[in-house]
Length: 129
Image (cartoon, rainbow, N blue to C red; front, side, top):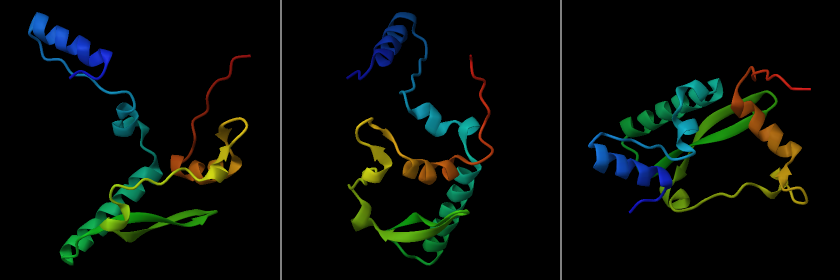
């Protein structure tokens, strides 16, 4: 079953021309692009991987490595553990204090939370007058 126009077109090309075709779903490119990794992402991914290896060497299981924000200013994060039963098939919604209800925009609280995760320095973009 095709789920997008891109998959439909890929199937048509595959059938008509007999070529290999690949599609990407919107949203996956920014999650896998090495050009868009922040230093924070890299550091936290390595810390989570090290913590997971340590758990494995201790023969501990049924746990998930978590990232725990220790400080906002300066931003610091450490690893923690959560039982899989507490996180499997669950989702955590964005806190209501992060959403400006009337405008459906994001609040300063969200900015304080998110900006350290982007790493630094943030790029400068040109503005058109």
